[in-house]
Image (cartoon, rainbow, N blue to C red; front, side, top):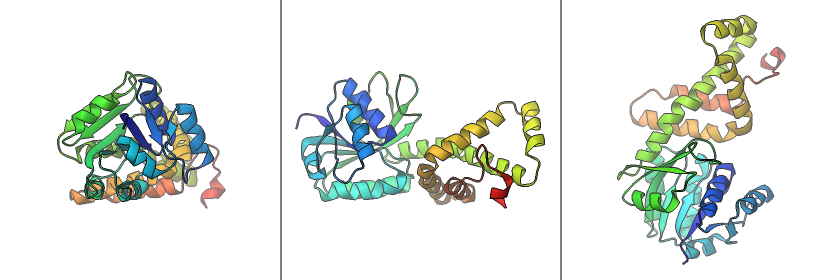
Length: 269
């Protein structure tokens, strides 16, 4: 092995993360088998090396980072375990501590070590925007491997699940409140009070109108990814004995966006 880092799978976040690692001199590999042409294009633009198959990836990398939609986290882990990976596996997905524990059990059964991860911020195109949080016994080692000028890394604790809990606690507010704004605007539109509501917001809550538009724009582009994230947050809340209904409702909002710029009233009826 040449110290290469495996990246599964280079979507917008993963590809940008991989690009920053490549710029810092870390060889990064991905798997093209079964992936789309757009994924291949992103990987090529990021400078990632194509291992071709998952089997080649696990035998040529001692560190694998999973960056995928939360609903796919277990499937990706099972594939890596089935391929016999025995290095260090980082799940950097927006999953609950319980799901992270499940991922750990899967990869550790194949002889791999597990590090829990969480990404807060946008795809890291410049310094100071994106933080990677890690937890687990090998969190410090992973932090040293992935730290770059454009990626801030932090070790939360030596307990797997802590990084995932932090990520979801953060997203519970940011994406949860965005979903609430979309539902509120839909209700105002359906009851013919949208215009006076927006005037009131401009008077008493300046900036909220722009936040609602930004929430809609992000929901159109990425809402499909956030459905699973809201469900993971709800699962975490339920496991803690906290009400989980709000974030299950947020998942429903992102499943079928009830408001977006240009939406007409008749679409709600």
